Length: 89
Image (cartoon, rainbow, N blue to C red; front, side, top):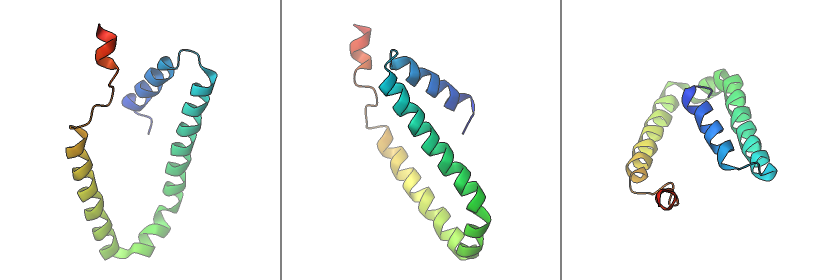
């Protein structure tokens, strides 16, 4: 949540806003939604663990791995910054 990669990403994204207050506001709103979701899940983790039980945790873990692998394979086919090549010209 707050490692060097996350902090660097926020600084770089804020730099791409070029002082646009609407863009910076949206970036902060998105950051607060993600942070709030993480805090909520941390607080509800023991109840969620009891609700799922050992078998539900195994199934959920395998589903998450399945979707992660599928997303990771498709990630390499996408172009995340199409304008990056144009900036080099």
